[in-house]
Image 1: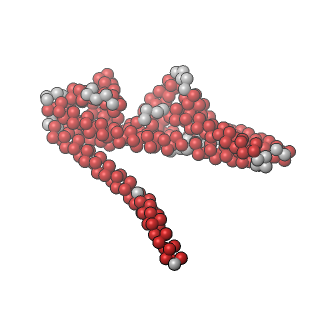
Image 2: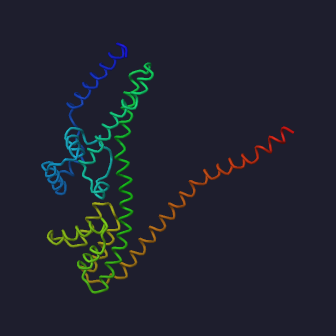
Image 3: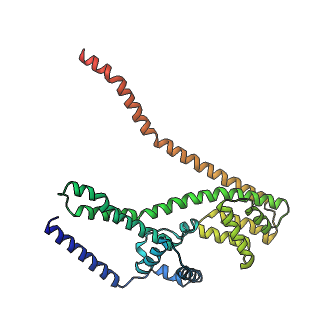
Length: 303
């Protein structure tokens, strides 16, 4: 490493440090929607829960990094992951922030580790190569948790919809057996052992001391997870609880329509996969034909 390269590296580090200090002292621009949400009753409860989590000790490095990052960094740097996606995965925003910081830190360390062997073998490699590699890996890994949350939340909603169809069928059977709306939903929730049934059972158990009705709890859970089917279930059960309507046929019809919609979606996904396989299959056929015809063409041209 030459003296000029050392001077450039030292100047870059000093400039980076001054930039971080200036960024820290720049006045923050609060987001209006976030401020109004924080001042609402639901936002106040969320802030209280957040303060409770801060006071409780956690040995997970993601929680420690997330707490520090949430306090120091502005909100706009974390990305646009929705609260519904985090809620259905049961991931707190603090842990999500910590995971992003942890991934970025791993990217910063991976750049020098991946380039140290080429730099030793070929001493002519400039110093900015590991710096660029570290920054590129850190930027790429910074956005990796966003993709993970979106993909996992999509799969979780699909699993939730499948289990919800079975739950609606069980509620209909319990109602046909003469159970009330609350008893039917609670009995149906205890029939399964998946995370969907456990989450619904927890929400129904909470309604016994919170003073809310089961259909209101299902609507709130649908808002929290972003699952529209829970709203429709809440509307159907509300007719039985408030007006005494017979809902067996409506519940069975709703469960059947959910299964049909999921079947249509799976068929469409299978068709997309089949369409993506057309081009590779065609290329393989062309290569096979070329292997068969090339010797004959060469023999004809040579003769």
